[in-house]
Amino acid sequence: MADHKTEAILLRCVDIGETDRIVHLFTPDLGRVTAMAKSARKSVKRFPGTLDLMNHLQVDLQIRPQRMTYIGRGKLISPFLELRAVPSRFALGCYLVELLGRLAPEGGAGGDSRRLFDFTLGAMHSIENLDPGPKLRMFLMLESLCALGLRPELRHCVRCGTELAGGDAFAFHFGEGGAHCGGCKREDGSSVPIHLGTLRLLEQGLHFGIDKLDRLQIPTREMREAEQLVGRFHRFHVGLELRSEAFLAEAFATHARGGANPA
Ligand SMILES: [Zn+2]
Image 1 (cartoon, rainbow, N blue to C red):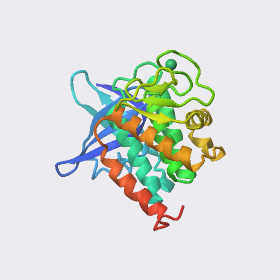
Image 2 (image 1 turned 90 degrees about the vertical axis):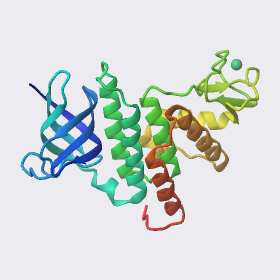
Image 3 (image 1 turned 180 degrees about the vertical axis):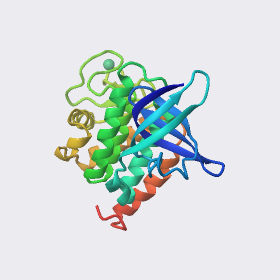
């Protein structure tokens, strides 16, 4: 039995029997891992308040070929307390871990898992610290897809390669994963009209990164277009609706009404 020490973010957990817990982890070196934590709910010594959703942990994994992986011990690095204190922040965190649970690769291919892990930790800190409004939600969705290797082409036409410029009317094609210039665009159900300004703002937001989104001002029309584009792009690639999406929509509706959410 090989012991493997690694960091992890807890994506999902399911209680089994009286005391055990199955956990789905995302790690920087092994990618997505499913592991059994025996006696997790009664061993305060081995798992002192660690095995909860979204926690950042240090874990000892016991890995055996062709057998179930076990967690020998877990140590809490961060519980992201600020993220749990506000419904819209918590909803964004739930969305992020559910998306990783669906799309993050197993097996940790090269540096990809490390990059995705670092992105996730950075995103969790941004969710804790930034205004949890529509702009953060939209760029969290978009940057998460980019981090998972699904980056849309926003600057050049995906058909002819021309750099998009000028006052032409453009379109965004979901199946082809990017923008069409005026000459290449087709009227079909797989694309939507899009203004150049919206594409530029999305590109600029990706360039800044989630942690510097405060620098980006997005006018109402461009925001509406961008939200529709990102929402449909997300649905196209993720397929089924995530369970956290309904919660996210509800938390943001409360936020918009100035309800229980203080941010
Ligand atoms: Zn073109």
